[in-house]
Image (cartoon, rainbow, N blue to C red):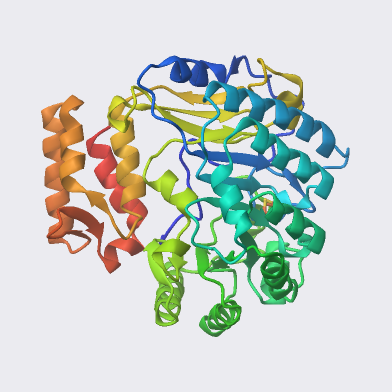
Length: 450
Ligand code: SF4
């Protein structure tokens, strides 16, 4: 109920720990996608890049992202390999001018400073990072037209790291606070001290990284409305301009799910979940942070995550690192369908297999206009701006008319039930009630195009 904690398309993050020695090595490489895309004469320039740093200090109990505690000190081989992949992607994409870079994990802030400096230099060599240089030159300019975000765990934020990131063009950090309550942090097996969050925000600010976002999780086992209100107050007291509020989900294969199955912890009920979500919307909006996506709130349009908006709007992005997934259009526009691919999650495969720098892939989706429309329903309805109905219907030309008719009937039915609105601008948006069951509404609509 309520909302996913993250994008699920092609596993933006891989499910579970995948370090099994039995896992077969991948046979295909990202060149199967990036090669045909780069040779297309009408390809649209790509403006976004995601890369994944898989290392963590400790495995949190709710986490199914591809991350692990690196006991073998493989940071340096990882960076050697990632440099080669960035070089290959930059070459094939024609040294594009990037507007958004997002580094997720894992814990990117765990990477040693000298290794970070190598990666930042590799970005400058293989991509046109001039937009970020302009933004770095003006420390106060948080509204520069380019966004370079690094995910940080509060306890790993240090002065030298922030200084290096800032010098390399980073202008936004996303800090995983999750909760300020020590008991709930313990349940999640998050090891940071709540006081490390304000310290991390301050270190980022002092280094000139003007935009800070905080991640919170609600519907924690045993969490009360008062405790959640305290978390929201703590985050608001930090004066950050972006907050993400996710509902705790029990993913298959995680330690938290095993504890739940053993009866050691009890998940929050759906009514409480909805109540905590509504409290977040009300409290954050009263403090001037508007919801622009079901789980994301920003102080102004310029404070919204440009990179995540590119995901939700189905734009193109390159991806590097184990388990990273990318998206490229075929034929110069979204209407031609798109490729989605995901690099292998297992670090051993990523390090040892290499196709002129490109990574082996674990999953590939080839262009299919119907799939792209289904994804647009899933992601577009999460956005406050919703979906442009005219554009959407115009893009259904390749779909059998009976399926489009079924879609129209479902839209009418959802509207009659007060879950979906079709506004005067011709956009489909979810009502407040619809937002509480967003995944179900999207699934209903997607089924009509299956
Ligand atoms: S720090 Fe983040 S990526 Fe690492 S184990 Fe915890 S939740 Fe997962």
